[in-house]
Image 1: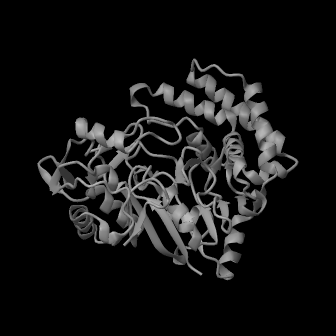
Image 2 (image 1 turned 30 degrees about the vertical axis):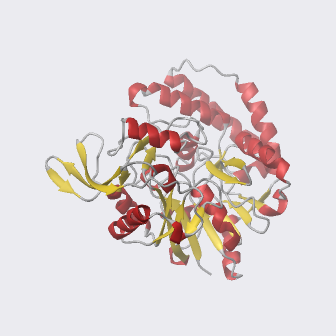
Image 3 (image 1 turned 90 degrees about the vertical axis):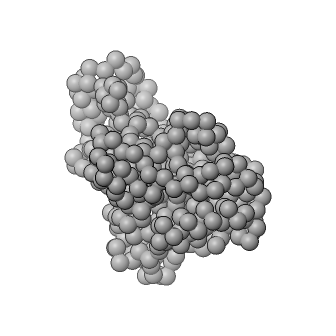
Length: 423
């Protein structure tokens, strides 16, 4: 049985959580393959907004099993709060939520190291969410990390203390003014770890292999966005994991030839949280309008997102490196009322016009080359059928589809799961 994959094509915040929630009814297993609680997947239905950080976005559907894969890093404290927030909805976590034994744990000192490292960068800061993600992945690749399966072994406490001792020495090196009470942080951590240990932990790659053999339908859920990929993103202003399609293979143990459809999600415009290059960023009233109407604030951090026109240069790049087979456009409703919409089709760098994402768009002077598209006045949020869409909005979709050369199969016109139109 093949696996379908869903991921973001911009700098994150594209609306992946909503689409996973919409699609879950067609799948048996939703499997998260990378990232940590720096992700904030927002779902809205029946008048209630839910924000998930670690738990996959199919958790509200009664039949689907939700798996946190080996490529994910887990903060037990945040995970505990997530479970508490979901308590009123009577979700049977014992049968609906599985955790990979190979997923790495975020320790309290990882968060401290994240904060100290970011503070030391001054104006050159990355824009970290300060959740300890980077230091945890550094320990993973440095072969020092602690995994979920480790907490069930006799040597767990000894290894934990050794790693924490190393982290505290590193904090001294940073010479940070960071104030903390390690005993208080550890008390909270171990209490939360006790909750995590009660969850069902599995050899996730074997579980997924057996599920494929049994003909189960699997949807791999990505976090962040392709332009934040550690290899192919706008480095160094990226996250610490592989956010592209390749991450589903390493983060779940799924073979490349088992992936069938790759769903790529993008906004009808572009946003970015934190530092880093953003060629189409808007600093005018239109940018403020889009941010206000689109409620562009990070679901995890609450930080205001930077806003800009849609960038087809970076979108085409993300489509190619992921092998996207279907596109899904989010937040088309946010652009209603804008007279003229600009679409970036090329970059101009040193008097040369290019249509690809180069090695560096930070230090180079990048001038986006735009095409003007007539906007639409109509409110899209109440539309339920594709035939009801205003012609100018349909023209915008058709223009993007032609440029990107991949079909746009879903158009979102609002945050609720009902505000989703299939084409």
